[in-house]
Amino acid sequence: MRWLLLSMLLLSGLEIGMFIWVGGMIGPWWVALLIILTGIIGVSLAKQQGVETWNKAQLSMRNGSAPTPYIIDGICILIGGIFLFTPGFITDIAGFILVIPYTRAPFKAYIGKLITKMMSKNTIIYRKW
Image (cartoon, rainbow, N blue to C red; front, side, top):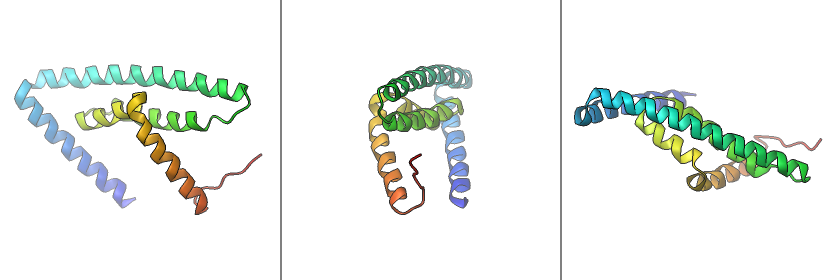
């Protein structure tokens, strides 16, 4: 929990520094416009990707297979959408990386390995119904 608090404080400081730096280069009104614009575009993209992933997961379940890759996609899109909704340039970059399908692939592989590792250590328990 301490690491989460420390990382949130560090990220907030970095975001404020970026606002000041970019605002000094292009002006504060342009920074405000960029924040609003990336928020609108990002949330729209996250919604579109989320609906598309949801439809693929439903199709997968209708065909009788587990929607495991789509669940991991959904986790990445949810986290990316939260980052895009949060004002800031660093969080926007991270959010776009997690929402865009081509850049999301390395994170999907990492999350899959992390879940497998946690299951082998019994940190998370998988039960078949």
